[in-house]
Image: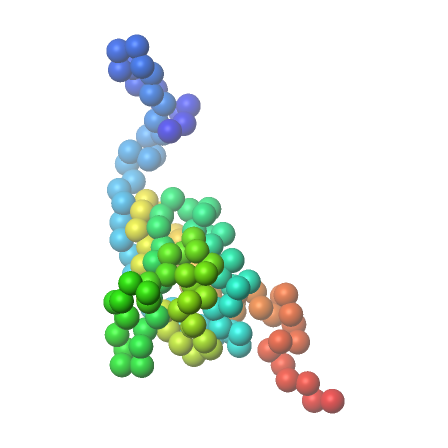
Length: 136
């Protein structure tokens, strides 16, 4: 709720943002391939967590098994706000995860996540030599 629009309910005045009322919750799914060399490691998971905390949607991640199906056991589901949950997926380079976002900005959240994964979780910006083997 924000001071953009107010409604009086007897003696109680509630502040609402009309944009919040117009935007319904949506549920969106995408398959995301982990392409960075280190996989979904602690720093990468922390970046994902920041994306989720800056959105209004919830994110769940599931590692996709070799047969192409998303794992359904409770221990194979990671909450996007939990670095430990994401680390427990053991998503390595080449693995795919099913990302499922639900909320008013679910589409935007998954677009940001796809971009982050495509940019290798900024691995090259933090450790430029991590993508290249030493030829010394």
